[in-house]
Image: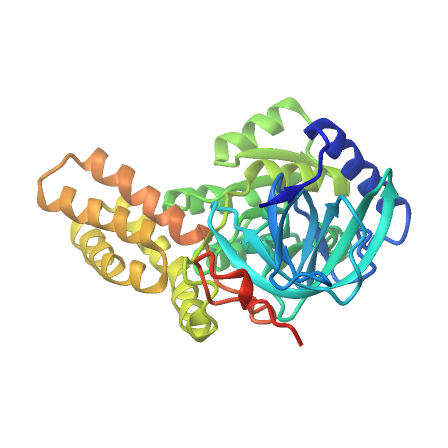
Length: 375
């Protein structure tokens, strides 16, 4: 028998929202009592097996979760749970699959009316980005020649969970963008050597399909139109606030793509190496589209068809196979280019497991609740 809290969804959401608001007003640790980053993780019915005193086997509960971090998870529970209670948490990934994580109840606090918030500390850290989109670090290229503005923007972006590289002119930005993966380029439009208008146009000419936002003090309507005509996706007037940066990141970044083998620690270094090579392949595909070069397209697609599934990126193999079949089958250039663009975007979306966060379980199946350690 699986036990659960007898509250409707709206009431549970209200309680969780109050806890989140209370945390923001406090020390910012998401109410977990730990200061490592924690992220909003709302799963309506997370399965937790608890080895409670007096029970010979673990008891399963369906609980609404609140937040997750590399070290643990927090959820609501309809009763008090003794700290030290062993448990197994079936974490739901962003793709609807799930992984087992063994842990121990570290804290249990009364919230209201018999409802408690339980914090479980995992035996081994997990990569929260696999389970929560908010935990994925954005990759930003900041193109800015003013050191003061660059320092402030980088500070704001770090607080928004973004890794930021800085280019001081358009020429440098083009080279960096064509060799590395970025979710967003923040392009200053007035710079020495090569300005943002020319840099953006050059990137688009070379087939670059990533998101570019014009970050500039030029505020006339004609300036906005000129930025968009050069190839920018959006316009961000200076000086920009953290809120404005958060909004543009949320609107332009694509969903990350994780390997289905992310929970196999032995595969992590191989996946990281494979993912590290994908941006260069993506740019070669984009340039091949621009140059109408079917031989290069076919060669890259054939290699990725063989490698994608091996590293847990089945969707890459699927699209690469479709490209090879269309080229060999004599499909129209437009049809082939559409699939190539899709494959190039998948290569940029691909993410490797975090080195500092090895997932807690290598099992992708439900496993047995009896797997919970009792010591």
